[in-house]
Image 1 (cartoon, rainbow, N blue to C red):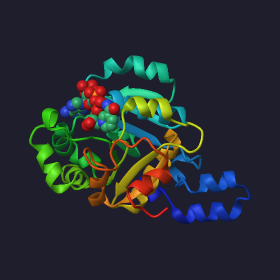
Image 2 (image 1 turned 135 degrees about the vertical axis):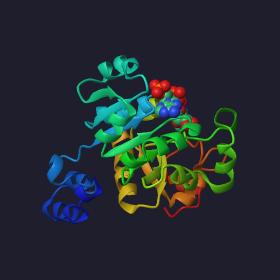
Image 3 (image 1 turned 120 degrees about the vertical axis):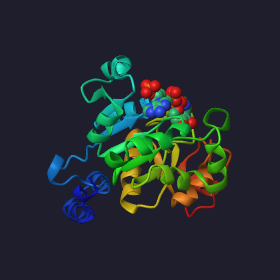
Length: 248
Ligand SMILES: NC(=O)c1ccc[n+]([C@@H]2O[C@H](COP(=O)([O-])OP(=O)(O)OC[C@H]3O[C@@H](n4cnc5c(N)ncnc54)[C@H](OP(=O)(O)O)[C@@H]3O)[C@@H](O)[C@H]2O)c1
């Protein structure tokens, strides 16, 4: 997928565009040959529960095609029916094959197994990771997260992926309620080592109805992991940057 996006293409569009609206669209990496230039993506969701179902649903409403996966896909019938034609249900394997971008929202303790079982299919995929480590639920891996930081730990288990931490800091109820609110939108911090993946993630944060704040590399995702100052902050981007002493 990454090679199907072109930053040069963005620039050409910017030059050609006269309006701020088109300028905005140009900042979103454009699809090249494979899927036209409408900027819509195919997204595979692993873990279609509270957060996966909510954020995936917001992307469907924004016009993206989303395959929600489950180990029991038949249980997702209600969700995909309610979301309409751009939503479908399938297995985890199908979601990974379908997605230009994969959104992972499973209990953190399930990440190592997913990374192992689907290593080949996940290789080089842009993966947005919303999983939080909770000791009571996830066990010893929560200590590893505490010690090494969550971005570094997720990358260790989702090896070979172009990982971006995102959508982990607030409750799905807040995401559902505050999406697309009038400006200032709610900030969603993101962090990743792959610049293009971060750019794609930022576009998807905007499409979900929020304001992306790039906190830094995966090592910096620690700053908004559970228990740290950037976690659980339902504030605007300007306020969030102030809280974390990021450049305005
Ligand atoms: N809830 C929130 O407000 C919120 C907010 C931010 C971040 N998070 C984080 O997001 C993650 C998901 O939380 P959630 O509240 O959405 O949980 P949830 O409602 O229980 O959904 C999690 C989903 O993960 C799937 N799953 C579990 N084990 C799996 C495995 N081994 N392989 C594949 N899929 C598996 C389950 O799908 P099937 O059983 O259908 O396969 C389940 O639907 C957690 O790490 C959580 O900390 C949650």
